[in-house]
Image (cartoon, rainbow, N blue to C red; front, side, top):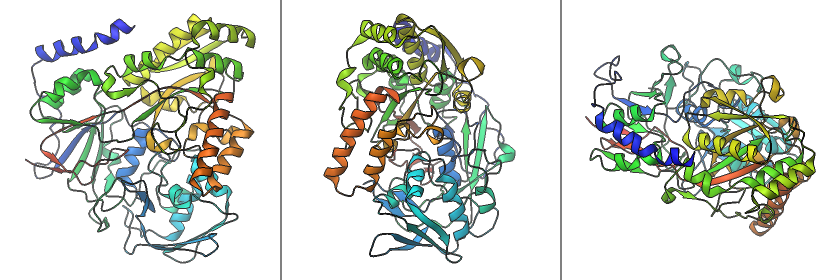
Length: 534
């Protein structure tokens, strides 16, 4: 397996050398007068509801279409976005938010406080930080057309950080009539108030997604900074062109038929970097956190000893070599459940697993009484790093004696399949592989994979009362030293009940044509502020 992966670059380089940079048929169908930004996204857009799913492709879709009350700046401080002014009562329990004047949805309706209330209530039933915030909320009301009042039932230190969180699930604001959809059912209509409109009639699943500039959008006057500030749409259209074959995508970039590639494979970067018309850079300063997620509902991973045994098999160096390849872009000694090098990062508790290896895992698996139940691993073949993680995990689990059923699929299918609570033998799953960007795992509360309250937890539905106590304590703590102490305790607890395995930390460069100006630094890809010359 390792030999096959390390040969990947050679195979692709040869393919590029012999392939004529012929037109790929991507340029037709757009009026010549329009400026179109053509993007190769990291995956196909299959699910359109950024509250129903945490999938990043859907989050990125959300940033084009929707707006938020607050947004993080480059210092990770929440700044007003849809909010004009806000006040906090002296006792810290009441927040009053006044919306900016003139905000409208894409269907022409004004954005009202009732839309905000309905949107936050729906988000607060799905998102880890939203659920925690709502648990400390006594009331959330529309005082008038533009004023929202949030009243807490107890002190809560992370109100603005929750409303301004940068990544999944982002508290996007939708019209009330749409936001009243059951949060466990996908919406079927995409209407936001963001800088671009979703052109549903032009959406071709598996191929193309189109967004057009929203002429009535009201940007803020401040300069853009991460997800905050002025969101100026400087192109008329944004087209996502799903190209799962890396060689085809590479040719499209080199020939100039597309402008931006969100996640080029690391082994192809030398070719992109040597192409004079292209820029390759890392725009996400925090990197990504690999997640090997267990399904806690069904055997065998409802047994903590089985989860601990699997954790002993994880060799981050192998995973990163296979999935990323170039050590310049990964850290193979990152065992923190919070972004490495962030304020509360710690590997406390990990010493029980690091370097234990196959024989120790076999012994613990035998102790668990595992009796050969099938283990269904979801293998997303179109995402190199998660594809490699699935293959290496399957190899390790077979080596320790588990009955592995590795099921290949695309990433979009995997993000739908992981929502199934059926048994692995009946269309469900045992493990899937994904990643969080650093902004999503900054602390025990932000990291949705640590939420352990059973049915309303993230996919995998972990349950652990002590972890929930620690996450709540972290949310209420305001002193940084106290927060760090709680984060250490939460890390130790995570390594006791093992919600998931960490298979590495890496950065993902983007590639774009030099005719683009204004590509923003951010933990998430943003498509406003980008100008296209020529």
